Length: 67
Image (cartoon, rainbow, N blue to C red; front, side, top):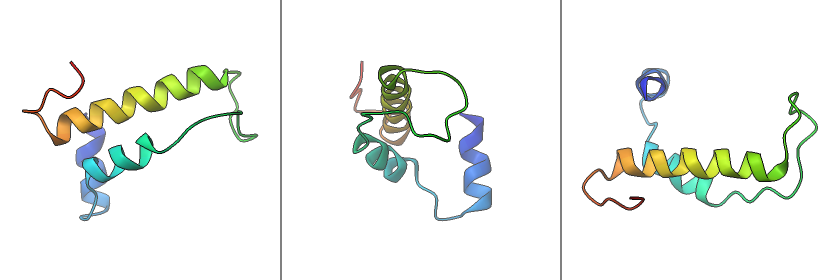
């Protein structure tokens, strides 16, 4: 993910493992008002879960945590 290198340039303390953990704690029950595209809370949760898994896989490449 190219954006991770940009995040590290902006904030040297950025850690994909930490962001992965934070995302793993998010459960979506309703869509926030600031979301401008019509999307269901299930779709948003799938996106968040997918991003969390990708970040975990990048952080711990040898573990094969998510297939």
